[in-house]
Image (cartoon, rainbow, N blue to C red; front, side, top):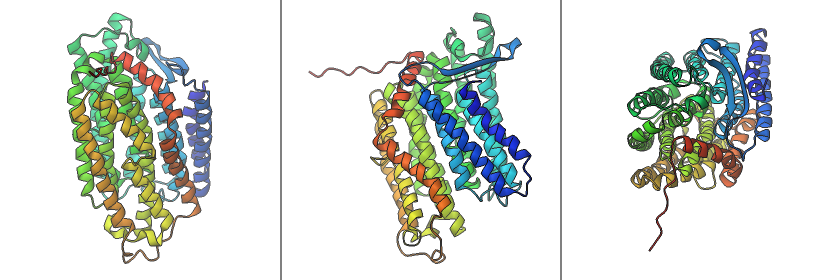
Length: 501
């Protein structure tokens, strides 16, 4: 069993331990879940240290027959793109468990069920990034909807049932389209190279352009819903507003990256001609997402809705970088996926603590927190600066790479998207001004600052945001070779600069 499979299965071992733990021992349940997630993180760090960053192709490969009659295997492996997303997953899960120590209480289901669902989600998130068999990817892609649906509907607030159902219906619709495209791809493979779902073999297929277009759309729409990309985004604000902070962190910080990851791993790799055909339309949708999310974020009064709309804007930037079809844009988009995960985690954590203390999610109710809860206020402030891509913080590097990479091929799209930086300053600084500064609003006088557990949870996230802002080289060295391989599969080359006169 490879180290990669070990990382996948460890959370399930934790699930088994929780199943046999009495429901009444909630503290022990939480401690077991955190311990398992920390062990999983430690092993994933070992895998990252053993990863050969200067090489291309998949590493830590493992393959076993699953449904042999259809050429379906349990096949896993990681390149630089998958590795950073798996690390993002294994880092955020223990942070979510520590930060949301009490958010599982008072839900429709038990505390034990909450932690079981989180650990199951971790296994599926690692598995979906590691899968190199397309059928295995699809199965996990669909199965991971179940724990998220239960986490939103069982432990959320407000109109949680409607939010969970809308999330499920949108995702199932996209999954059905992907299934149809997957079957079509399998039939073509059967006629050319024999029935297989192996990603590297499917990338060698010769598919006529009209067929590629239809297959591409089946995959892309499913990924655009998951991402989410305008106009397939409408499930997100309601889900983010209703879910617990921890669920929102995993949903927006990790699971939604499956959409943009799928665009890179499958759309660009399997359907290069269709990718080029649809690129202008996708670039247009990306720019709309960037500006639409930013404009709507400015007017939000609910702090969770604000974060949701900022994420729509940020996912537009990620998609823009992917389909700019340049090495800078693609590496920047992948790096942005990682950085967005951490900045979103910081925002949802601090916002969740603010809501828990104030018993309100309205931004205007948080006035004067800087005077009452300075550590919480500074944490929220740094998270906000990361969201607006302030130089010196990690998001700046990735956003800069995306915009530069896009400008070399689509200058108008890059210029329009750069305008979102100004809008980001507005929606972040307006929220900071209303919630942290000014006179202390009635009801905020006795609010408590962050405790030790909460400081332990937020500290590594802020440290990573600052560290990668000043020294992104180790991560980019891992990402760049994999981006080059994807560019090669897609038949894309960087534009050549014209020599001056």
